[in-house]
Image (tube, rainbow, N blue to C red; front, side, top):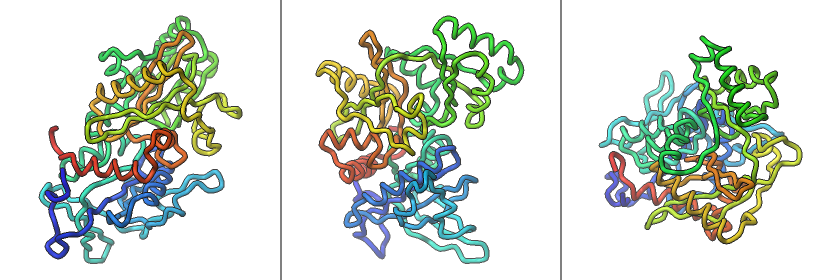
Length: 385
């Protein structure tokens, strides 16, 4: 969708497109979302766009937030929260659920609601459930507001690791062995669920990785060495999602590849490799965000391996009907085969995150990357497409 077709305020017929950067949210990844938003706010070209920062608190309140990226950084190994940077502890932001009206309204108890102007595009930098999983995308479709990133279906598939793997397998992409423990099974037949996992381990070996089926940023994941640690690992995963995924260990190199939507379609970045973190048993939350374990960009692969992982990353993007951007994560196994682990439809997006680093090495800097994503969203209509 071109900006000339967007509704224009009669008082400001030639105003700059207004971008609402939405962050925070109700998931366990709330703090990382705020950090990402700070980086995006710093990078948006204010000569081209007006910006409206909106935060969602962990209890679901939509709040106006300070346009202050410095307050959105990790400090003292602690991530920020929307409650800390909201302009009011009670005020709320309301998006219109009307495709003919894009005006955002702000209200506080006992005060007259205030119109904040029309929003032309939303840049949702939410991670995890209630934001990255198709829920916010559905709201924006109802509102008729363009937004950065994948639509409802691709966002939902990208969030739910079970159905992500099912989709990839149906398109011929190789996925690793896994099984799913649903909440009813764990509640009603715990011994049967344990027996299934033991049989799975008998076939594929220990250790196993137990993780929430619909979470990211390596939150809630436990590496389980034997049966003794299983119950605790499942309970930890269920703190974030009642549905749990159990995966076999894949022995190989961790390779990531970014996909970005250009005018002529999706293209893949140079890939990166995540080396085993020295101070961690695997690439967990602290290794990613607190200790900032560096990746190798570009990955030390042969030209043939690079071309293959780029092809598979774009194939995964297309298989899940993604739009805008995706980070695709693979294992390059000891026998030289790429196995897809997962995709992220809104990957970590700070300048030191792997997705921007891969595109930086591919010739697309961070500011240009942000601009390309906004422009792609403005070109794309809402609704069926």
